[in-house]
Image (cartoon, rainbow, N blue to C red):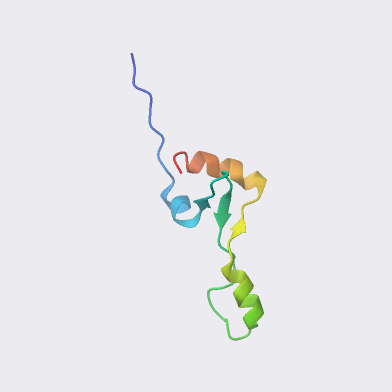
Length: 68
């Protein structure tokens, strides 16, 4: 009887996404790396909060992160 193959985790995705208890994926928001002086404090503060990944992309992440 053959062994069942193990799936490899996509290491790039593992560093960028986090799974919630309910199974949704969280991502960080874009536009907060540089040229921050021209952005308002309120805008930068809102960019700190994590955002949920869209349902279309969640299917791809399920395959990339099988054990997360």
